[in-house]
Length: 220
Image 1: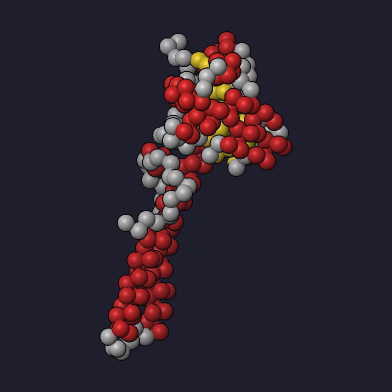
Image 2 (image 1 turned 45 degrees about the horizontal axis):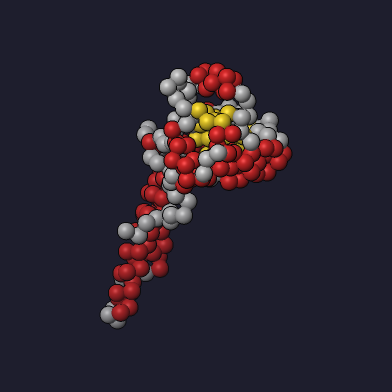
């Protein structure tokens, strides 16, 4: 079976499996991702749907049973068309195409070599909760890098503007080389390093996924 998570903050996502309906329901209830009021989809039902119809209903469906590789790929693309960042877990050869199609493909450690080649992340210990820890740590690292770059750019730009203005007005250099070195080593370095090693914020998982096409630092 494969799991797809496309909700944020991270909550139980969707289960896509080739098993029967009764088996899928039983597992879904144990994972607390399915209730008796939820709607299910089968691979055959997806075959009868157009892509537009699937995009409209897929967010409300927690479990898809009797699915094939082509169904998994259509599900991933339908979720992406809804503007969602899609992460998918899988362990078999039949999951490889959908793993490649997802924004984040996660292969289980016990999975096949084909599955691991198609994924961006390999879950060595096969513990799904490790994904949460990885997301939390990754967001913290990115936040620290962004704070570091912002601070360093603000300090460097102020020095650059000062030097450019003195050159433009034909004034003596405002800073000697030793002063610039002193600023970089003792005034810029320690604060920037402290920002880069800042501890993790408690609500960091509540922030939505960042679009991979966006720049690290926004000018405005």
